[in-house]
Length: 161
Image (cartoon, rainbow, N blue to C red):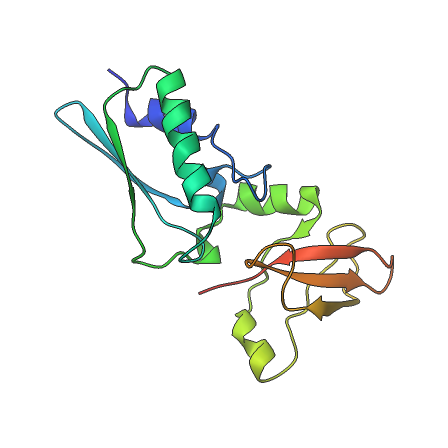
């Protein structure tokens, strides 16, 4: 019988198709694992409602579990409570930065509607001298920034709460 720890280890192999260095555990979209009568229920929450990656993630969960001989399971997607960037693990934030994407800073990005965008350090050279180029980056969950020190463009994983 597979345990919850075994299942978490198996599910750590499932990557976000938009940011392939992050697992669904790193992102915090794996919300819960429950077992009743030897049948697992895996609950996931999208980073955005309507996130196009969720269909791929669910298919990858099914494939990964089947490949690891886990046969009795259901995958459920729930929208409430809504996902926040607070759910990204510290390991996930470290992986984002190493991948060249600035992890969320501790400021809610809604401030860009009313004031300056958050100060986002460059993930490459660590300079604080950066500017937002576009509120929309390579995916809906990212904004596009440029470092004024090293001149490199980079994505910023928006902070949501």
